[in-house]
Amino acid sequence: MPSVQCRYCNRFFDTENVSETYCSCCNHKFKRSSSCLICGIRFEHPGLNVCCSEECLEDYINKCKTLISDEKIENVCRHCKKHFYANQQRRFCSLRCGFQSINKISEKEYFTFTNGILFNDILRSCLNSNSLIVPKTWGLEVHIVNHHKYCLKYLVFFKDQYFSNHMHLVKQEAWHCLVGGFEMILRRKNAEATFSYLKEAGKIELEPGTEHQIRALDDSILVEVSTQSFNEDTIRSYSNI
Image 1 (cartoon, rainbow, N blue to C red):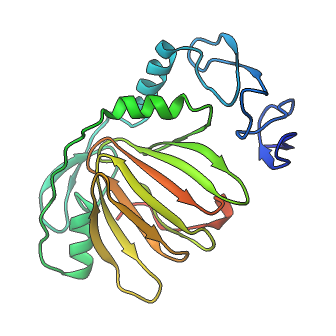
Image 2: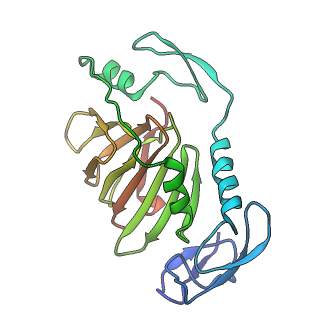
Image 3: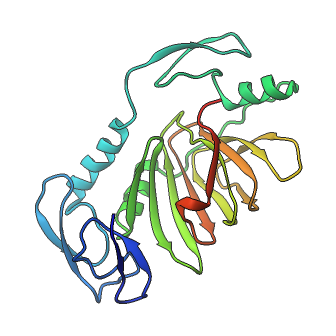
């Protein structure tokens, strides 16, 4: 994919359309035209909008959810021996069971949380922010800004989805759980792995070199604030525990 230099902030960004002259930093002063991902109609917008209307945006949200396979595979948890169904082959029914099996620690209780704000309302607000949308196997990322000074993202997880265990060599990040909740396995530098929960309204900071993996206990959204994010900085240990 070719790189183009933004005429406003001078940052290089990847795009399939080499005629684009502004990245996600552009505001209402710089309008562009693109095709709606749902209906195909071309429309003008100030940033990186993906849909031309609220109706198309609703359809796009539903389309993102259907990216998660509906086909369920029967698995047997190696820790609690429970039979469970998931949309991929797994060794454990949850990160909690995986962690307990590896570290042989005592049982921990689940927490309960209440979504005081509707998940879809927050998701719709994120997608309306004229920001870069990056579909993921576990949901999607909304890149509000990402350049050499700082980065702000919304990480949107659908229920029971999780990303690979990985770490960053350079990036320092902080998470704030805006809605929903997560279970987490963290392994900081020169330390044993720990299991914990990130509740709604909770926050945590991660130093470079910290291995981390999280699973969403419900449809959930994380706010991620960090130094610049780039793919070459990510080292993955494994995808499924």
